[in-house]
Amino acid sequence: MCVTIDVDEDGREKLGLAGTALGGILAFFGFILMILAGFIKINIDDKLVLMRGYDPDVLPSFLLTVGIIMFVTNLVMAKVCYDSGYPETRGRFQNLLILFLLYLFVIIWFIFAASMLCFSHSSEIKDSLKDGITKMMNVYHNEPKAKLLIDRLQLDYHCCGSEKHEEWYAIGWMNMKYININNPETKKKLVEGKVVTDSVPFSCCDYLSPRPCIHHDIKDDNLHKKNTDTLSKRGCSHILMNYFDNVVLLPSGYAILMAFFVQMIMMVLLRLMQTSIGNACEQEDPVGIGIAYIIPNCPCAMCSTGDPMKYVKHAKKKIKNKKKPKDESEDDNSPEESDDDARGGGGGGGGGGGGGGDSDGGDDNGGKKKNKKDKEKEKQDKKDKKKEKKEEKKAKKSKKKEEKKAKKEKKKAKKAEKKKAKSSKKKSPKAKKKPKAKKKSPKRKSKRRK
Image (cartoon, rainbow, N blue to C red):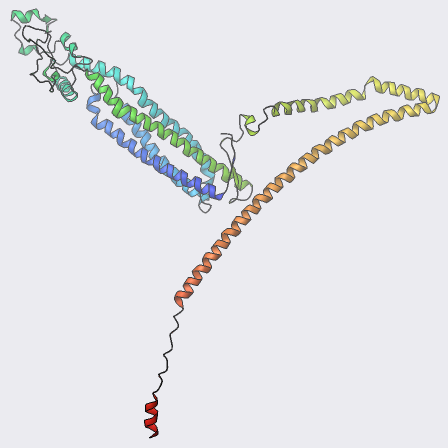
C-alpha cells in the first residue's frame, strides 16, 4: 500500500490493457448475475411461497440491481482504462479519473453487501421454511392450493413433513366431509373436531420401496406384519434448504465475493495509472516516467526505511535545535561574562591586564559564531549534495530514455530500408537475356562466292 513505483509509458499501456480485460470480465459477470436473479424469481418462486414471514422478492431484486450496476459500470470502466493507456486518447478522461475511482469505491461495497446477503439468507430461509411448511400442513385438509403444494413438494423431493414424517400423526389432515363421524371407531380418533391417526398423505410414499406403500395405520402391527419402511423419511425443510444452499445461495455468494476482489484489483490498477499520469504531467513530461502509488502519505512512516529509530532521532534533533537559541541567550547574560567585564575593568585600572581580559572574552564569542557558521555550511553542503544526486538520477533517466528512443528509431529505419529494398526489387524488371547471334555456316559462304 505504501510502495511507490516508477511507471513509464509502456507500463501505463499495460495497466490500461489489464484494466480493460478486468472490466470486460466483470461486465460479463454482471450479465450472469442478472440472469441468476431472473432464474431465482421464475423457477424458485413457487417454493418461496412455502416460506412464512419472508419476502420472496428481496433476494432476486437486490441481485438484479447489483448485476445491472456491475454490467454498466464495468463497460464504462473498460473504455476508460483503454483510452487512458494511450497518450493520444488520454485527454478524454484524464481529469475524471479521480471521480471514477470514488464511484468504484462506493460500488464495491454494494457488491460486498450482495455476497453477504446471499450468505445471511441461509438461516432466514431455513426458519421461514419450517414455519411455512407446518402452516401449509395444518390447512392441508380444507385448502386445495395448500394440498396441491404439499403433495407436489413431497413427490418431487421425496420428503415427508417439515422435519420428519411423524409430524403428520399430530395433524388432522383428512377432510371431514368425506369421513363418517357417526362411526364409533372414528369418534375415538376425533381431537377438536378432526380425525388424528397414525396416517400420512399418499405423497409421502417412497416410490423406491419394493412393496406397496402403507400410509394408513402405520403403527398397527396387527394389520401390517413384517412392516418395512415404505415412506420417505427425510423432512422437506431440510431438503429444500440443501437445495437453496448448494444450488442458489452459496455458489452465488462465493461468486459475488470473487467479483468483489476482482473489482478491488481493477480499482488499484486504475489508481496506479491515475497517479502515474498525474505525476508525469507535473514534471512537464506526459509521456515520461511518473511515480505511481495508492496512498499519497504513508501512514506507517517506517515503511520507507530500514532504520526503525530514524524518526525518533529526527525528533530529538528538532528538540535540540529548539533549545540552542535559548542556551545562547542565557550565555549572553551569564555570570561568566559579568566576571569577564569585572576583570576587564580591573585590568583597565592596572594597565595592560584589563586589555588582556577583554581579548579573551572576544575570542570566546568569536569561537561560538564560527561554530554556528560551520554548522550552517555543513547543512548547506548536505542539501547541495542531495540536489546533485537528484539531478544525476534525472540525467541518467533522461539518457536511458534517449537511448531507448534512438534504438527504436534505428529499428524503424532498418525496417523502412528493408521495405524499400524489397519494393525496388519487385518494381525493377528482370534483365532480358540478349539472343546469341547465329554463326553462319562456311558452306553457305562458299556457295555465294561461286
